[in-house]
Amino acid sequence: MTLNADQVIESLKQIDRRSFETHDQYARAVVAVKDLLARLQTPWDHIHRLTWKEPAYIAALKVATDINLFTSWQASDSDPKTVSELAAMSGVEEALLVRLLRHISAMGALNEVAPDTYTLTSFTESLAGPGNSDSLRLMFEATYPAFLNLPSFLAKNGYRNPINSSDSNWQDLRHSPQTYIEFVGSDTDRTKSFQNLMVAYNKAKGVWTDFYPTTDLIRGIKPDRVVLVDAGGGLGFDIEAFRLKHRQLPNKSLVLQDLPTVIATVQVHDCIKVMPHNLFEPQPVKGARAYFTHIVFHTWTNTDAMKVLHNLAEAMERGYSKLLLHEKIISDRHPTPDTTSMDLTMMAMFSATERTQSIWREMLTAANLKINKVYTSPTLFDAIIEAELA
Image (cartoon, rainbow, N blue to C red):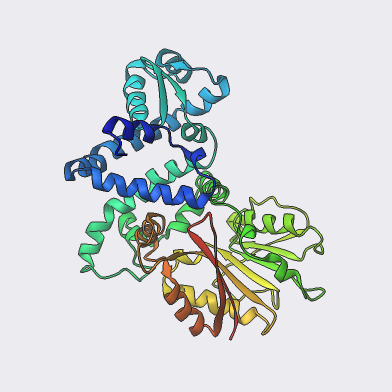
């Protein structure tokens, strides 16, 4: 039976995340909706969304987070709030707030329950705390300016693929040799925002120990050896997930490494050894059972990435040590917007790149490493490449 237009629209209104039993079903539905919009929208619809709707939406959200609107709103109670109440709560002129909230609601981030009366959605609730709100801050301070500069940077460079980390779009934008990582680390609040963003990203994407067989690493571990080195591990989300799954491990058999500015803010379980380390320097922990990295290589050009791979390989013990690279892998066909957008972000910020599996294989081979297996997650657009010395 063919449904009429009203029936189709009504059936679409009934669909939400609870409509799907698995994340795979949900992910395929998201892709289907994206493709549906592409078929439905006219060229004008598309350009209108890109140039007017989305920029206005993001700016309105940034203002709302700047005045701590969602934080105050959530802390008060969950009842519907009028614009008048919210204006009094935030100290913002009501005439301004009316206009901001209208568009935020029109874009689906607030529920309008009566004229100029709203409730929070799960998304705007998430902006009440750290993580997503920090993403907006970093977007306005860095990512958006970098993308706006990218077309002119590529034109000036003859439309060649950026591969020079010391002459990047970010440095062209800033008229400074300072890298983005150095920019983040130069300000304590900005560093905290970046760390909050990474924690939120990890929590949203899931835990690597759910799809990689960590019990295989535990078998046959050598006494008095480090079991896992989380190199460039930030605040320790990944190594803590490993610790929680394997609580029987000896004290200090887990090592968390990152730059001194990051390590200075880390608070982890006592059994985890915290170690300041620059991955471009020789790896100080030799012969560990596994060396783990999570989404760090994509900030480096292939030349810089090879330096780090060589440092890790030189620390490994043949036949015993494993290298676990938790990275996004770009599919050869029909790559997801999650990976393609991240790839262009790495271009804009670092002259770096996301990589296909074939490129990873070439690079690992050049570092005297071989791929054992690639583990993919049912809930992520990421994978873990397990490698060892060739």
